[in-house]
Image 1: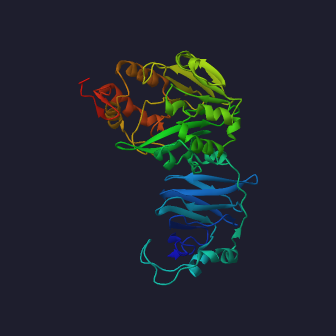
Image 2: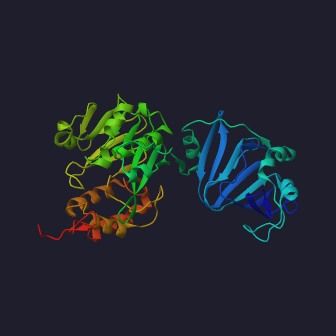
Image 3: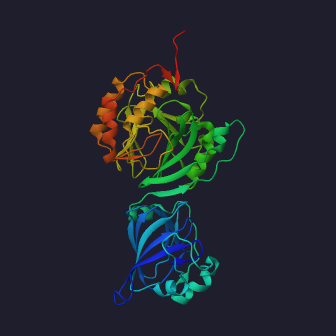
Length: 431
């Protein structure tokens, strides 16, 4: 049956009659963007996401918390606890709902309309969703007034073990920005325990390409990569969804290049007490001759920055893209930030499980990023010995531990060094 116009298609799997009133089980196919507002009731409710994605909200400590639930997420809402959910996608999302004891079956029977199959058009006019506020209290469902709080999702993500996803606000146009950068829009995802990926897809020759920054929310917050100068507004607004950008204690760059540090001066304006942390070689080769006015720290291999709950260890990786290149290893979550290593071309999701190692190597050859394979393969050996639980690359999605071996194999077995092309353009050798 269909409950609500443009709403939920509900299929009973176990009715109150079949369970002697002890529980009910429904499969729910939610229409895009549909879901009940924040509410509570006297029965316990369990949700298991089958397909698609849902944004689940509940109130804890007087604050509204929201998490993104992906397939396989299963959690229980206790009786009387305020909660709500909505389909987060532009297509149908499915889940199982278990009410214990019997919950909304009576409302479904009265206000649902029969359909031949989930997704089919009803033979009669379904319930107008604007009437939900009037109808829900009749069936023991009390609507709750929410209170928004920025960055409040982290505790919920820890409890449920799913990725938090929120779009950042659209960057405001500024003079001097390219058309591509003006059209770009950042999004922010909490990947693991206070580590957020900020991603902006930009069209380049051959298709979309994602430029990532990473925010670490801690006692002394850190931003890894600034993005290009023109992306600053979107990146700053994404940071602002989690914390006040003025609180940034560290802005780190892993080599000297526009997408690493193009926004460093603008972040200094937003966070004047912040420290720019980079490799000692970046200081000697670049910043020593730059007009950067903020505090600078140049680090060598093995040195550590203490953020509070987390520690960032510096790994010098010369000639893995640049002479002054380095990587960062966050020791608490065992997260590696490898800059341009482990790229996946295209507009990738926050977490990538697919083996795109061969595509990565082909992209490297096309772009001419690495002059030689030897220094890269030596660093790959070092990465393997670190055994990171997460790899957060600057372009593409983050990789869990189990996804990394496919990329490592490709870097060991396939050619990826410079082969006569620069950014896809062949050099003809004629001068």
